[in-house]
Image (cartoon, rainbow, N blue to C red):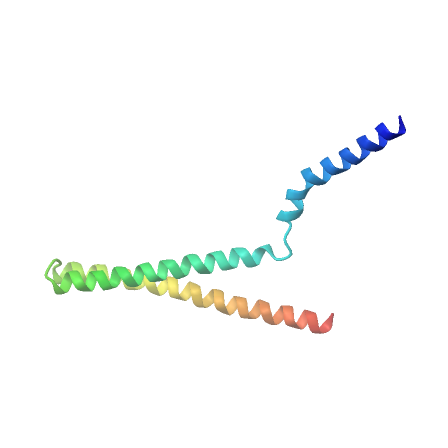
Amino acid sequence: MIFLILWLFILGTMLLVYLYYPFLESNQAFPEVDLVEERRQTLAIEREQSYTALADLDEDFETGKLSIQDYQKLRTELLQETADIVSQLEADAELDVESEIEKYKQRRQG
């Protein structure tokens, strides 16, 4: 009878560990780092897409596919979008540097 209770206790403990394990994995030490890096990668991809769109637009204008009015309007819009993306990347980089400085200060004090 004691072996049965001991065996059930061991199996129950193993089952609890197995079921609780995913919750342990999702509780990372720095989950915001992953989100920041994901945002940075997304913005970098958007920046490259904007550069490609600008290069394609210039090529279309040079080959005569676009009028000067359409070209100027589209180029202005694309330049503004690209500038916004680059600004976001730079702002994120500045925030990242500031947070790294704060973490360093905390490590020095602690």
